[in-house]
Image (cartoon, rainbow, N blue to C red; front, side):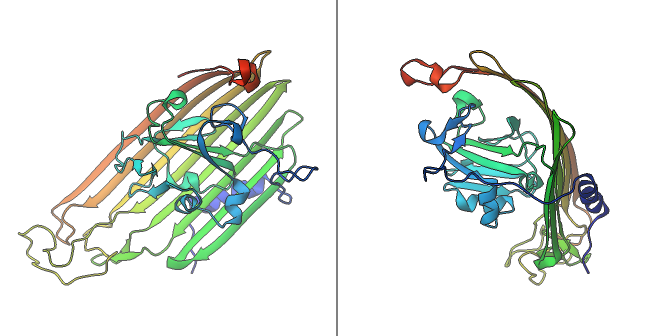
Length: 374
């Protein structure tokens, strides 16, 4: 029997009730002369042709990801050489580029691969955030990018660019069922709210009913991942050359912790009255509690873009917060004398001001100037 949590049903029902009509979003087509249109990226914080920038960039559109059946964070790395996106045991993404990254996922640690979503830097990014289906494209910049992206980009940068809201109403979604009693559902919609205002919203839910293993003493599931996320944008165009984008997101993650003793060793510390216990499955556990990490994160952002005579002025303000809670068994045995719990949170506020001239503004074909402050 398929079971979906109430928060998941409420999230998708709200999206479906807000937006309707048939889906419509097209990928760039070849030009009339038979040539493929230019691939445009923002790797240097300005819109440029990918063939004219001195940076190793892999750019993949949202439609290309969908055509390859890529719907989660781990599969995305399959089409990008040198990239690993590991969903950590704490439910956050641990990116590695060309073998460089940070394996620790505890609070306060930041990766050496910087992750940006719509220009906003994320020191920690939940797994569900990568699963949303409103991605326009993903850009992966390989190698040190400290000049434009700061200290946390010594290995590279991952930029996620989501779709802008459209005045043309559209909606698309999917639902699937797989191994381990896993249900996934996603929905995206956009519509206009007037001549100068439009909005979009995307939601994703993944419920893994059975874990890869079981916790033998309690019978509960072990080593599983449940995620839910919702993200939305409000686009306002008050006048020529002015764009105001208000964004927000919420993500919930529930991840079962992996912990077991290895064959040939004592189950836990030497004083356990149980002595050597018979082996169990690789993903099974003998904890006296069902170990898990649960996290809730949310954030809002405000992006203001203004075209001026010689450049484009952009202001990006953002606030994010993540709250995590861990409950685990310290000795991996049914003996209830070594339990621990940890709780914490991360708050982040960023303010970025960019002044970027068009590329042709530089002399002798050199790039125009760009000034960025944090």
